[in-house]
Length: 468
Image (cartoon, rainbow, N blue to C red; front, side, top):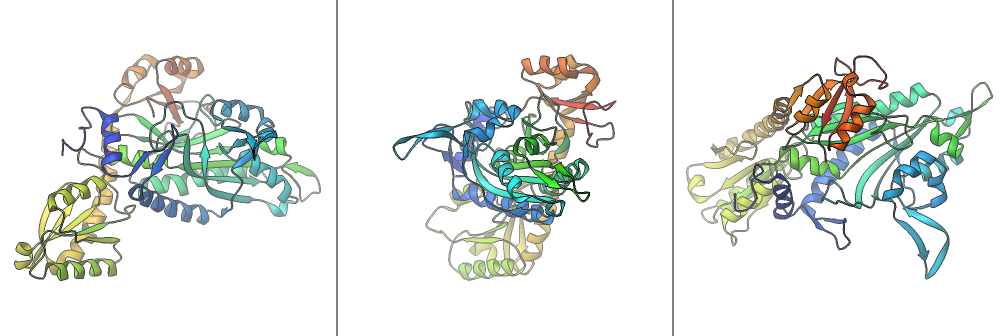
């Protein structure tokens, strides 16, 4: 397998690129910084999307769609927002062979255009809360692109809500953070994220508070997996998102926004992948069990088809590989690269003994199993390996996280993993010093690990790391 992928320990970035190419997950697009998501990669994204969409709807939000093109003037209404996004904007100045009267921006995020329509749709306190989400593509002109992690165009969901009070807005931003984002990442993606508060320097442009889910990748670096923002009344005042209160006065709403993207695919690869390829957690996997005919003859095809059907009837997402005109070894390598959680290999020799071979991707084990017991063995393996992948990632994070007391120690520790240091030992000047050395404050936590309301709270802990 070393001839297929560069070993992770030898060159982690090259391993990442090799895996994406060899597993046929994605390719570079024709315009620098864009990507083509291939069917194998898109199937995983569809599963992420379905799981996330169900959680967002359970939280009461409804899906809508807003335009790709946004008038440039919209972004200029919220000064901090336009300043934060200006370096990344793609701006259209001509259309239909003519110069446009006003340039339009290709959607980098939709707070402004959705704010315009919230102002139109909200009149009374009875219209609140307004809970919206959209699945869309966005464009942020990326100077240092990397497939899934940073591309000039990517896919995501972005939620936008309006509330009558600050307390309601904060509660909803946190509900999404925990019930949609953290739950999906931990329980489906198997990535043990740390959930915390971004510093003022790191928070979203135009927000009053940004909450984040941070995952540790296989090289010890951090990846921001998703964020949820309190926007205060900044956008409400810029776009006059106001309502008549129960007392008859006119009040500005309190808004939130929150998003996750195809970056989660990059996180999945870098958190769980190994030198043999991708390892997809069973709950997420588009194909959970891959039934493979080793060699045809002696009733093998019939037995494999029956196993496929039995697994499907048991609720397993299953596929059958009967391409006996392609060498079995090559097909097995491809299955390893794709990260199918379980393979069921059916060949004449094993079948003559009444067995099939159950191969688990997580630990590489191979077990001859009576055909009648295969479904039970597969179900048990899927449950165990979902847990195993999460536990391995959690143990790795623990082994690469150190507690220190000074900024200098935190910066040094960030070369190999994460550092936990008192926020009081870092502060705003220390954060700037760390940034100058390629280290960022990933988030702030209370001493008990819970999410603070403000970076001004006493006794906070900062997590410092190098990041993607």
